[in-house]
Each structure stands twice: as structure tokens, then as C-alpha cells.
Length: 286
Image (cartoon, one colour):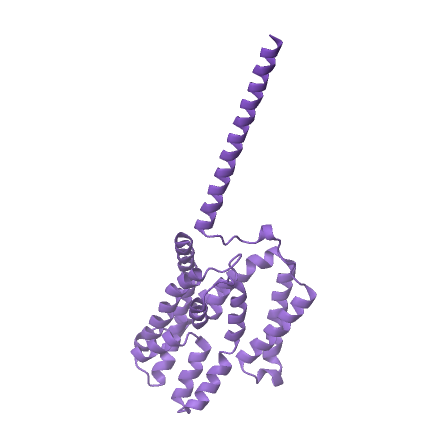
């Protein structure tokens, strides 16, 4: 079990590298916003460690700069980050039923768009240590990028910072392109999502709604329609991933060995009985 956890952890760290690089670039601009709001580099880094949300932090720093009240800040943060409720619910279905509450709480705390994207795309059930590996690499990139953004952000040209942030878009494309190539239904749903998102952003009445709420509405509507129109058949038992422990596997192996030895002994006894009968028949004939 430990070797499997280590394997998933290392794989998560590998997959977290492009996320960390993208986070680092984006958080430089976040650091500039934090500096304008009057926060120090250390305060900004702590904010990024405890609030893993780009839009939420940008809104938070903007409200701090405007002198907003705590109530206003809490309401706006709840609205901006509401989409993570959906992501956490989806990940809870991806985890094994015997996953402890502690693992669920840790993963839920660090859920972001990017970490959710790579975690939900893991085949079979999600091992929490995979997400831990992603978090280990990605979270420091976000926090230290914010820290350096306060110190060095104004030195870098804005175009250079924007160019570095393109890495996140490339990572998102890498998440949904492989399954979209395998399934025409997924490809169609992705295309509909892009189109609907564009339309929602340009309809005056809907465009006034916050981006987080728009994402929730689209996610619920498209997911519900896909679930009704294209239900996924339940996997057969032979296709479901095995969650047996090493001890269980060893026990079953030992039982198989005992059974095989028992069959060998039974065969030997049968052979001896047959030979004995043949000898008796020969003696009677003599």
C-alpha cells in the first residue's frame, strides 16, 4: 500500500510541475495587486497559502484597497469561489468510499480549477496521494509567485507576465483533449461549453452576473443534460479497479498454493491406490 501511495505521489508531483509554473506567472500579477492594496510580501504569501483561488484573491485584494467591510469581503469571496463546491462534490465521487474524512478535508481545502482538472482525469478511483503530489508542487508556486510579485512584479514588463500565464491554458487543453479525442460525446459537450460560455459573457442581462455564478449555472445545466441524454453504463466488476491490500493478496495466494498442494497429494493417493489394485489383480491371476 505504501509503495502505491508513493507511486501516485510522485506522479502527482510530475503532473503538478506545469501547474506550478503557470501559477507562478499568474501570481506575479496578483502580487502587484496585493502591493497596491497595501499588503506586504509576507502578508500576500500567507493570503495565497490560505486562499487557493486566483479570482477570489484578486477580488479580495481589490476590496481591501477600496476599504470594504468584512461582511462585503466574505460575501464576495463566497460568490467568487462557489464553483469549488461543485468541484469538491465531483471529486468526492472519484474517491474510494473508504477514504477517510481527513483526506477529504485536505483535498477539499486545496481544490482549484487546475488541481481539480488533473485529479478528475485520473483513470479509476482517485488516490489522495496523487492530489497531494500535485499540491506539493503547485501550492508553493502560487504562494512564492505572489511573494515575488510584491517585490519584483513592477520590474517585469506586463507583456512578459501575460506570456508566462499562457502555460495554464495549455495545461487545461492537455486535460480535456485526450478524452475528447476518444469520445465524440465529450468533444461535443466541450464545444457546447465553450459556445455557451461565450454567449453568456456577451448577453447583457447575464453578463452582469459574476463569473463564478455563471460557471455554476453552465456546469449544472450542461452536466444535467449530459447525464440525462448520455448516461454512462455502470462498469462491470471485471473492469472495476481492484482495491485489495497486500495482505489480502498474500492470503489468497497462500490459499491457492495450499489448494494446489492438496490436489497434488490427492493425485498421488489415487495413483498409489490404482497401483495397489493392479498388483492385487496380478497376484490373483498368478
